[in-house]
Structure formats: structure tokens, C-alpha cells
Image (tube, rainbow, N blue to C red; front, side, top):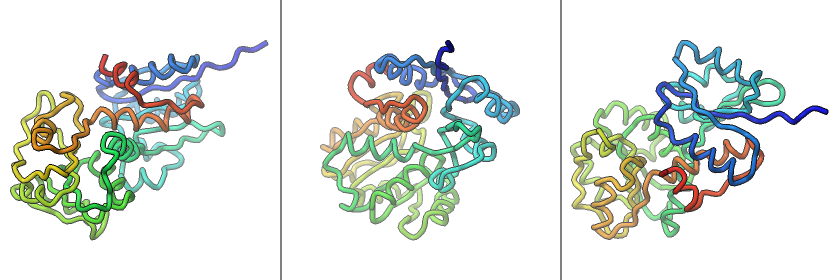
Length: 277
């Protein structure tokens, strides 16, 4: 009599010790009584391809991918989803029964689901969204907002050329705004999103003027360390609905967990508490 294989998953990064994903998936495995494991794996760039191709032989059913490997894994995977191609990065790998590797991106799903959960009255079609930043996370946010039906995105980045590249990639519903004019753009926004690292622990503050915030606006920050950034603090004081960044991390993990372990987990207060430690 043979025992069933214990499914393994994990997160690949360089570095990876800071990742909250092992706490998150460990909580869900315990909650659902699943005999599986989720482990952090520090993998150097030069070892990435060999590591990923070896993992299925070791009992791994999939993995999350974090910095700096999100782009490189797309060249290693056998199949890349359309949304991962559009975003230009993958954060979720699925090792299929036929031995092939599927690369997907669930960051946009995590962002928009967190937004709807934290601001259930937000209507995507109510008006423009102002998005600060133009990095990899921004691409996932922009893709999800356009898909949700936001009529226009006012995009501002410290380096204008990167914002213009996104405009070229995503089309004429993107309007690029100079970084020095971002405060003026905020006056138009029904939704304000910070996708930069400004305001994170150990990083400079976000110095965009916020006096134009409307009290009817929804404001969200992808940063979750600290949980309430200065942007969210100021927005809350202005009467805005605020949504912290932790929920995006939690929700983006749901599709992967479901594919790997066969159960769809809930993002609830116990989940947040488990990750916050």
C-alpha cells in the first residue's frame, strides 16, 4: 500500500527571508487540514532555470515567484497566460501533471479583489483613477483597473519615460501626468493608488501634495509595512475611504493555493492576523 504524495509549494526569491507567504499559506494549510508544505527558497538568478525544472520531480505542485525572478520565469515556463504577458511578469507557477510549467500573474486579481472588499461602494466607472508609479506592480494594477471598466487612468511617475511606456503598452485610456503635477491630478481622482515604494519602512516619504483629495475618493496603497502609510493616514483624515496593501498580498495568493492544494481559501480576519503575526 503506497501513501499519497504530500504536495509541496513555496516562494522563490533572492532574497526571500522577508516574505510573508509562508505564514499565509501555512495558515491556510492548517485551517483546511491539508497535509502539505509551503517553503521559502532563496534561489540565485543563475540557478533559477535548473531549480524550477527540478522542483516537479521533488514533489512540488507549484510556486510563487518574487523579486528579482518575475520576468525571468516567463522564459522558463512552457505556457504563459495572456495576463502575465500583458503585465510582463509572472508571480505564480503551476507544475502540471503532464510535466509542463504554466506561468500566471495574480497580482491584478489580488489588487482589484482587495479594493472591492475594502471599499465595496467603489464604482470603477465613477471617474478617473490616479496611479502613482510605473513599475511591475503598477502594470498589474493598470491592467486590472482597465479590465474593471475605469474610464481613464492618470499615471504619474518620477521618471516620465516609464509612464509613457505604459501608455504605449496599454492604450489611450492612460494619460501621463508629470510627477510635479501629480498633486493636481489627485483632485480629479475618484480612486488614488500608490504603487511606488515611497512611504515604505526604510524608504523616503511620498511627498505628492494631497490637499486636493476629495472626501468621496477611495485611496489605496500597495505598501503594507507600515500597514497605515502616511498617504492612508492623510486620506483618512480627509474623510476618504482607505484600503491598506495587505489585502492585495492575501488575495493574490488565493488562486495559486486553490490550484496547488485543491481548496479555495478565505481571506478573513484570521488570515490577516496570521500574516501580521
